[in-house]
Amino acid sequence: MPPISRGFRGRPRREVDPARVPPGQYVVDDFPVLSAGPTPRTPLEQWSFTVQGAVDAARTWSWDELLALPQETFTVDIHCVTKWSKLGTTWTGVSLDTLLEGVETEAEFVSAWCDGDYTTNLPLEDLVDGKAWIAHTFEGEPLDPEHGGPARLVVPHLYFWKSAKWVRGITLTIDDEPGFWELAGYHNHGDPWREQRYWSD
Image (cartoon, rainbow, N blue to C red; front, side, top):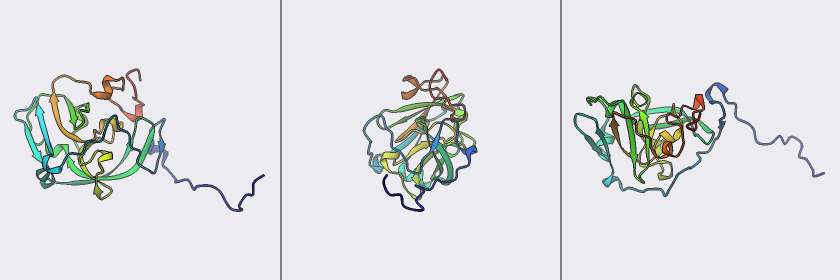
């Protein structure tokens, strides 16, 4: 039998409020990187964000114009469909409420589109009333490209594939248009508290 050091009890476990962890999830301390393709790296002087589609007029912001908008710092728990959850993450960015202020539309859905041709679809109601942001800062530092920098959509109440990395705009649509993972069989909505992982869930 190998020697056992007295007092060794292994890595201490962090106390976690189970009410913050959706069913089927486990808590991580690191920030796993999951991407379907290469990491895009768009120079900030070429970056822009556009609201278009079923709107009275399209709107586009450059990087500097986005930073000039009212900024919000928020702390949220995030949940990946691959079953990890990361609690208490702090981001800074612009609320979708700010970007959609004054937009006239009859659309009920949104398609978020990104560098790398990734798209994901969401009901418009999941992006407004303080539920979603275009975030550029994570834990006080510029968002790493591997995590979606320079900017990603953050929709913390849905599985994290809905928080599109490298986001460049949203298209408001009358009809729902499934995105990259949704066409591959992932659930159309993605509520982690209802374990909506795949179409059959």
